[in-house]
Length: 327
Image (tube, rainbow, N blue to C red; front, side):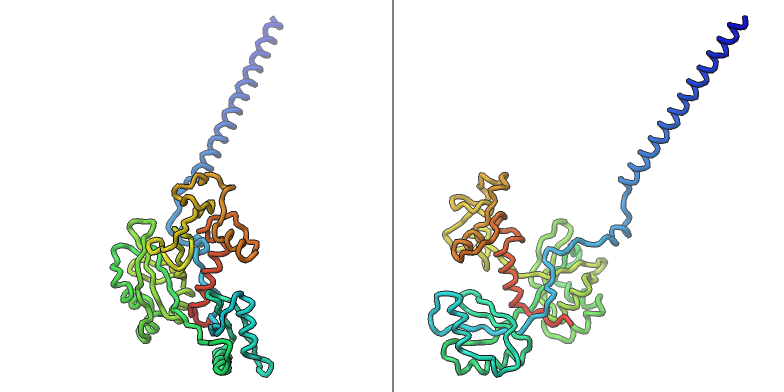
């Protein structure tokens, strides 16, 4: 009898321990599921407008130049020259700065064997021009400046483009007086497509003062929107010959290399090496290396923003634009 009682007690203890173990496993499993559901809800939580608006924007694809434009002159040798060094030698023989309290801040050989010479102040530039009037080896003139441009990204299609200037003038106090008191202060040049079919981009030509003001603000009011603005560089590259200064529709070159692999017997559209990243070769950098014995990296497409030749052309354009003073 006692033996049966002990057996029953033992079986009861085993069942109790088993039940407790089951309950413990169940509770642990429930807690794990709750944690995973909580994590999932956090990951899929819809962001509020305020959180999206407060998120920093990525760097602009075409950042505004931070330097102020310097006064410059363009020097052209009167005699035929065959190299960049000869251009510089003609300049050095034509003028001496030993008796002056200044010197050129930068020399740069540009297209057609011309030399761009920058100075720190307009008075230095004007003095150099005056002294070069008697030079026989070179001709000199003040470098012409273009007004800067800005692009408004994401204007609603409900806003007529022809009304943009008046809307911007009326809605932005910091720009109103500058626009009203200056001729051709802000002029719409053209529209561009936006990735969103309900929006468009607008490119404006403006004077340096307004350009600085717009760049400092980063956004301007247009009707119901706060429009993001960026500097716009009038850089043009032909997708046919891969050279600069004209578009494909006006290309007259007979050479049409591939922008991906630099081959001359096909274009990018028909390139058999598109999927092969190791075949990527920049035609312009390759030709520049061959012609001037430079060592530019060629492992990129000819239209890439990282291309040294593209960067050089953009910088050359920026030098021709009057961005005013950043003070």
